[in-house]
Image (cartoon, rainbow, N blue to C red; front, side, top):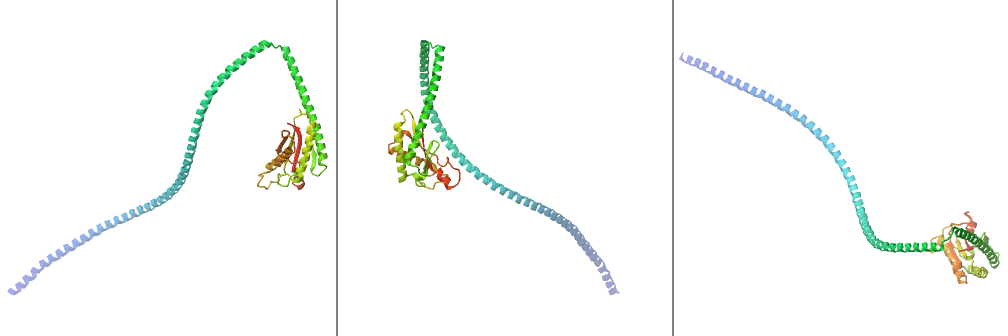
Length: 334
């Protein structure tokens, strides 16, 4: 009996402890559940904030990417601007150097002009003195003229008479000049006639108007201004005829024999004569020198070169070229 009571008492003592353990376990479980719930709540909030942060970061990244694209474009534009500005800088530098040279040249010119102005200032001072002296001399001349006019006391009738005399002298002078021209024409015709007799009726020698014409081939080789053997003989005969005519021409007639050189239009191929101007002029001078060497006075001779610019025939044929290559002689007044 006492043993049974002891066992019953032990059984009853275990139950409260078990209940306490269960209660404690339940509280732990509730606490864990509470912690889990709280953890889930905070974790959810954290995850939601993280998604929002990711979304914000994504938007910021897109904005940064767009800004980077804009910056790249701006950088490209800036590079182009830099290249353009470098080109402009180089051009400006070259222009500045040129302007520096120009400024230096202008300064040198300014200094030269200042020196000239100084020099001219001195000369102007001398000129002012000379002008004052000339003014005094002019006043003296005017006074003398006034005295002469008063002394002469020229009347209107005398002035009219003198004007009539002057007009008569002008008419007589024109008549005398016309007579001299006609007389020169007579000697020109005589000269051409004698020259024709001396030179003979040869091809390449002709009279055209008031000119006696030699074809260049009769006197010169092609492209040359040296007289050939036949050319020297022709010019000697010309000189002999001219000296005979000179004895007949009165000394008061101011005659001159003009020798004109002409070429064709084809350019000359010669290192000695740059153009047909030089060739035609040298040929005319050669004829003049040969005439002088054969006794014709130099003060009655003149030479001129016309190149290819006074053609007789404008055709592009060998016959036209040959006709245009010529030496013309003209007896004229000085």
